[in-house]
Image (cartoon, rainbow, N blue to C red; front, side, top):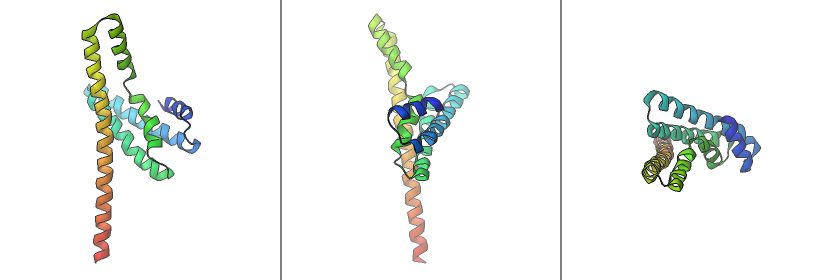
Length: 143
């Protein structure tokens, strides 16, 4: 997953100094996904937690490298995108197996929703942390 992310980052012209960190963020997100999927046998929960990990670590990586968060989010998301399931939907539609296509499409929609939820939750926690930090700073200044 590390090398897949690096390769995708080269394809989309990421800055060279962001490639290694983006690969590490991706690897951590995929490891969380894999561990949750194997132990809990829930691809949806695994996708949400994997994406949350990517979003959370991307925020720290962007602060560390002083670069936008999206530079780390997009390539790190590549291993979690449901490309195989989307292919199965198209294949089942082409051969006329509409029931299986519908089941795979529902799976793709849930995975896409899980990806969006994971990013939303990580950004929510980041905003909550920033507001709490500003509140505490303001409270100390009042003393």
